[in-house]
Amino acid sequence: MEAGKDRSAWWPLKRAWLGLLLWLLTGCALCRTPLDCAIPADAGLAARTENAAGIYAVSCPDVLEISVDSHPEQNGQREIGPDGRIDVGPQGRLRIEGRTVAEVALLLSQIYGVSPTAVHARVAAYKSRQLYLIGQVAGLQHVVPYQGPETVVDLLHRVGGITPVAAPDAVRVVRSHISEGKAPEVFQVDLQAILLHHDCRTNIYLHPQDQIFVGETRHLSVLKCIPPWLRPIYETLCGMRRSAAKMG
Image (cartoon, rainbow, N blue to C red; front, side, top):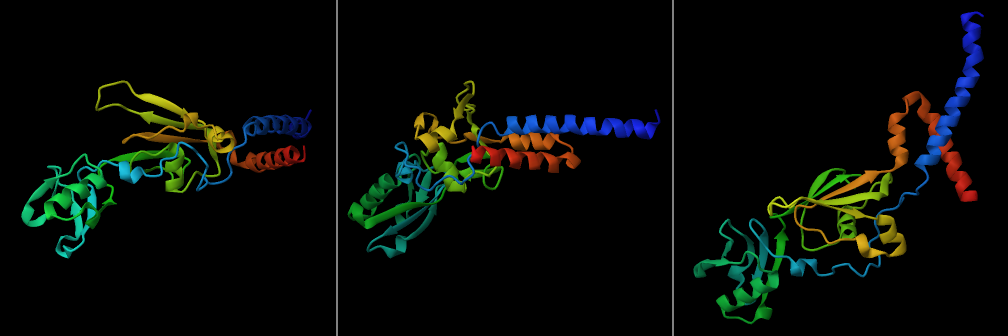
């Protein structure tokens, strides 16, 4: 048999095998439906912390914005120094590290001799602690400030949500415990259960320096392994499977 005829005879069979392989791959990749929308602004979660800023303990080099009724000369921003203190004018430097803004306001009211309601304090810049987002989140890998106790879903909403190819069953939080000299902890987070079924058991509260990993869907993982010339066929088969699933 001539070489050309041999190739032409085998090519339909090869195409059939490739088609079958891609069909099976699409089935594996689509067996779990990803969340194709951003994290909602109000997920209706009982575990949500509404007053995280009020619980936040300030630290160096956080920046506070302070205003004092009847003492406008004291209004302005104060950065917490390495000594854990802020400048309070003629009264010197006040140690506030580890306190909430409400506690700071109370201390300032005593220093200035005014009612606690006359002192207003808030965190203008969170600079002392961070959280690390890696994977399929808005903006991809980046560092965001820790702003007090918030859940995983709260954080994802704060940063803009997840990408369309994020896998809701591939989310985990790694807590290193380096400062305590302990072994790291890994927490699995089931976004699908949290958002669709209001099962908040895995919607944990985050600690400073936590690392939040959001994995990608099997569809994207498989697509990366397929040669570029086969990807249009694979995408077509994926679309056919999705259409069939919706009709079923």
